[in-house]
Structures are given as C-alpha cells and as structure tokens.
Image (cartoon, rainbow, N blue to C red; front, side, top):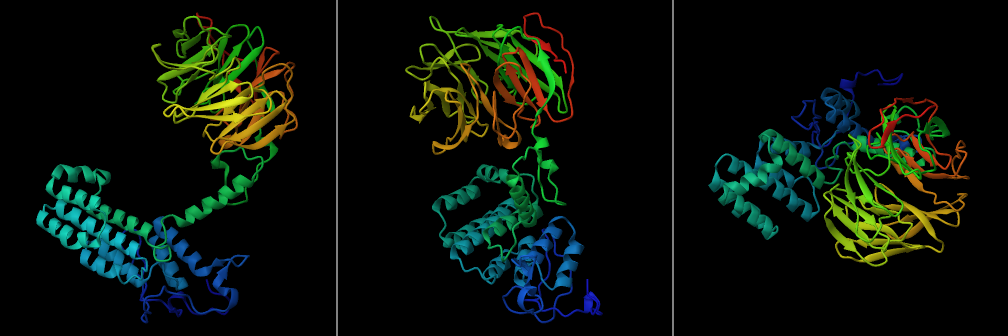
Amino acid sequence: MGGVEDDEPPSKRVKVASEGLASLSNCLPCKVNKPSNPLEGSMAKPLPSEGKEDMVGSKGIIRRVEFVRIITKALYSLGYERSGALLEEESGIYLHSSIVNEFRKHILAGSWNESISTLNKIGLTDEKILKSASFLILEQKLFEHLENGRFMDALKTLRSEITPLHISEKQIHELAGCIVSPSKFALRTLETQGLDVANSRLKLLEDLQKLFPPTIMIPERRLEHLVEQALNVQREACFFHNSLDSCLSLYSDHQCGRDQIPSRTTQILHAHQDEVWFVQFSNNGKYLASSSSDRSAIIWEVEWPPETRIMVAWSPDDSLLLTCGMEEVVKCWDVSTGYCIHVYEKNGLNLISCGWFPDGKWVFSGLTDQSICMWDLDGKEMECWRGQRTIKIADMAVTSDGKYVVSICKESAILLLDRETKLEKFIEEEHVITSFSLSRDDKFLLLNLVNEEIHLWSLGDLKLVAKYRGHKRTRFVIRSCFGGFEQAFIASGKARGFIDALAGHSGAVNCVSWNPVNPHMLASGSDDRTIRIWGLQRGANVRHKDTLSNGVVHCNGNS
C-alpha cells in the first residue's frame, strides 16, 4: 500500500486515533491494536495533511474519512471482519469512536445501566434523540425481565426509569399492560417472535442506529445505497432504457441503444375473419387476448422466453376473461376450459364496457343509459351509479387500491369518482376523447384525442404533463398504452414522429398492448385482420393449441 519511499511495514506506521478506537461489527467486536494515545470525544482522524489530500476522487468532493469509514462498514456488513479491521489499522480511520464501541458492547452484553451511562457520553446534543434512545434501551431491559419472570424488576424499571422520561402515557400504559397481562406481553413480542436474546439485542442496536446521527453510527448498507443511487441516475438518464435491472453493471456506465425497443415483426397471427379491434396482454404477461368485429375472442399461446400468451380483459389472477360486445352483454370465460361461466346483463339496457376490481371479486360495466354498474362474480348487482357517468365510447378503469373509478363521462371530459365519498373530479379537454389508458402505478392517464394528439395527465394534481403529436387517425378509435421498463414508453396505433415508427400492417392499427412482464414484446391489432407481435432481433417460437368447442380458440400465428 506504500509508495516508493514507504519502507515501513503497515504495523509500524504512526496513527493518531480518538479514544482508542476499535472496530465492532454487527455482532461481536474484532480485536485490533488500539492506539496508546487516545483523544477525548472526537472521531479518529488520519495523519494531518494539507489541501486536497483530505479529499478523494477526480472532483475533490469526497471526504477521505467518510469514504474510508463507509467502505469499512460495508466490509463488516459483508462478513469480511478481518479485512475491515485491517483497513482501520492501515488507514488510521476507525469505524466507531471508542465510546461508541463501548456503548455497543454494553448493549450486546445486556449491561443496561452501563449502556445508559455510556449513551450520555456519546455526545448527542438533541435531547429528543437522547430520550428516545434511553426509552428503547429501557424497554428492552423491561422485556428481558418479563422474559425471565422477574416481574417486580420489570415494574421497578417502569416506575423508576421509564416513567421519568415523560414519554407518552399510551406507551406507559402499554408497558404496564404487558406486566400485568402475560397475554398482552405475548402479543407485543409477536413482532420479534423467533429472535433469541442475542438477536433481539442486535435488533435494538439497529433501531438505535436509525436514531443516531450518521456521523456517530453509519447507517446499515450505506455503500450499497450510494451505488444504487448512482445506477438509478444512469438508468433515468438513459433515453432508450428498456432493459431489466439485471443488465446494469458497475463495470461501465449504463447506456441503452435503440435496439432495446421492440421494432421488428417476429410473428403475424392469422385467425380473425374481420377487423381486429382490441388486443391486451394478461397481467402476468403469459397471455394475449384479441377481439374482432367477426364476433370472436381468441386466446393466443406464444412460446417465448418467458413463455407468452395473449388475451383481452383479464381478472387479476389471469384465470378469468371478460368480453363485451357492441352494446350487448358482458361474458365471463374460464381461461383453462374456454367455457363461458357467467353472463352479466341488465334488463332493458345494453353493456358497452367491462373491467375488474383489483381484488378480482367484482366486475363493472358502463351501460347505454350512461350509468356504471358493479356485480359480484355470481352476477348479484352490488352498486349502480346513475347519471352521466359514462358515454357510448366508454373506456373505464379502477385504480389499483379500488378507490377511484375512471371513465369518459362526456365527449371531452374524464370522470374520477371516489367510491367512498362519492366526490367527483374531472379532467377537461378541448377536443373529443376517443380512449384512455391508466398507468399501472395509477399516477398517469394517457388520453387519445380526436385532433390527433395524445395527452399525458398527472392524476395526483390533475395537471397536463405532456402532449404527443404526430399521431395519425381517421374515423377509427385508436388506443395507446404505457409499456416497456417501468412503463417509461408510450405506444400508439398509427403513430409517427416518436422514438420509432413500426411499419408492417396494411390497415389501420386500432390497438396496441405492451407485455407487462417482457419489456421487449409488443402486440398490435389491425383492420388488416392480423395481429403482429413485435420484438427484438431474436424471434419467437409458436406452438399451436387445439380449438375449443365453444368457439374461443387457442392458436398460433405464422412467422
């Protein structure tokens, strides 16, 4: 580690340390040679240096002491205790001050009085932190008394040590309840069930570490956190990023190319006899469903790593599929058998849309009288919201927490209806809305407009975030979708002027669906009666499935 003029072995190098600092891992301390000349109260420092020698890195913004301590902490956390101890000795920069090491030893040994005494010497200036840390230590002391059946000692700790801290009465009552009621004590300790005394004390140290300033005790996994932050910055700055996190490497800066966007036709699926109006991948990315004006719904099975199957409108667990015709009824299909297991309808009215609640226990539909109805799986009507809640062009969605129902309530307005409070919020547009898509995290809404624009709205503050132009449509309803890694991309039928334009269909592209599991797979349905599967340069292998007796087909496409 020394330079040309560094003739002395590491063990003989001079070091200036504070308070005889020694290393202590998350478990028991490792023994290292302590300096013979401790300083009071301050953290150990390396040999005095001038100018930029106290900093490392090309930009001179990283403090050497902090850098070395964080590396030492990472070594101990990874189990490399000898390496951590050697780094402390070699650098003269110690992970903890001697008083902190002493404090940790007392905690692990269960020396509670010494722990409280040492805590007051660490140098905490925030009285609130000091009181909170004292409470955690004394709470552990009380619980260990109870664990050993020393109820009077536990009561004494509560009265003479914990109560004078003047914490909330609720916490005092809870601890008192643990003393007088063994069942309450058992319930309180369920959170740490399975931890022996040694591990419960380690957990106490972790809780105390979260309270202390990081200069006193470095947070767990700090180095990993910093590295992950750096990778996240690179990923977010990558314009074409559409790869899994496993592709990120520490060996080089991350940068995706255009080849990560699915832009090559890997399959063309022929089966429908008329225009394909809707395609949608299942939630697990293993299915794709398509519906057509030929009055059929087809389930496709495509072998792809991962194995991919394609569908139309799925239950959260992908075991059931809803289909809805043009002002007809909603049908529920069993995916495994292909049989229709239920029909949802309302006397005198037709159904024009369908969807699932997040728990998979209810289904909903927009009706021709502009109301919204909900049923359980057995067809019992649970709720019906009347009034102008939806229109004939009726995309609908429910947020993942089940709180809001989103629908097109007027030609140029989106309704967000709070199911609990029945409060209504609106997104108003100047032009007719033809369709919308809700992001998987419920933060954004993508609106297709009749003026050939796509608008991105933030649902948190109901603000227009972005406008996408170049989208082409005629008299048809064109549907867009979020997709790719973390849904960072937008795909749209008949799109031009974006990141990429995919040529292949000979008719209007009515709908696109991005596989939620495989960011490199995209499906599009067209008036040319075909479905195209888009991917990277590697193709897909397709397997044919037998036709089911009820007219719903599992089948393959031809490359």
